[in-house]
Length: 305
Image 1 (cartoon, rainbow, N blue to C red):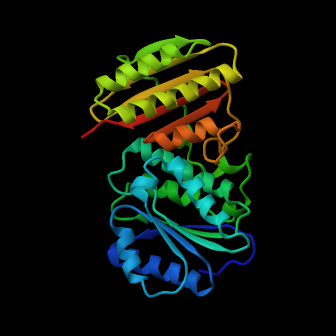
Image 2: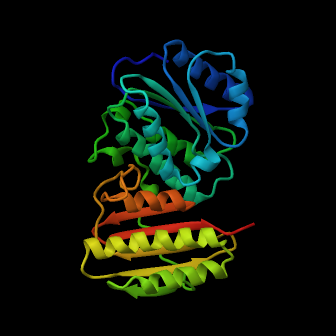
Image 3: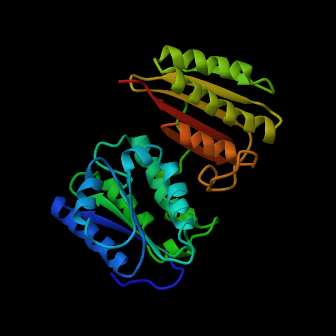
């Protein structure tokens, strides 16, 4: 791999087969950066960070580790964390290893992780960063590997703009969300959000969420519905349902969100955009689709056990 110079993003997929190739390639990638004084952030699922950390223990340089199964449970959380790491090192080139999709990851989460990969090309288009994303070539579906090749095309990574980032987004990850199931409970709302909060709280308790998680979901649904009041005049519709694994709330209204990175940029509590960022922090998965038909935001919260 040729080493980049200057403020150019390098966003590369590593298609590995077996643990030896996985650890060997990641260690070599990080060591090459540390040798040039580049700080590195490594986000891998499960105990893989520990394995890499032990191998790099004697290597001088700054290393930060994160469990991707937690950090990237909702993939929309990843970009703000990498941005925060970059902001601590102004004027320095940095390295990031992030594995957002692994075998067994549910389809909706994998789809959002693929959207995240495309959005990295926009969020860090002018950043001094070299990003390596491992993909298990033996354990992941062929379609996921094909999507990864598309989101990691170069030089598209370093030239993405708000108008072009979708050029490398697989069409299947940009379709409208499927309709809520027939058994979903629906509520139309206008300017009074109290019924929204009551419905979400009642269904969250029925689904077995803890008190803290119930409060998080009520807060998230209220924040999204509040955007309806702030940005539209027609009101919105809330749907709530649960499966054996999770409770889901969807808010749909006639407004449009034009910023592709909405919810992925940290804001102060009084700033516009803080609500969506907060929603991404408290929910296990957030799906957002916006266009001429309006905006749908789907909030997922895992049920205990």
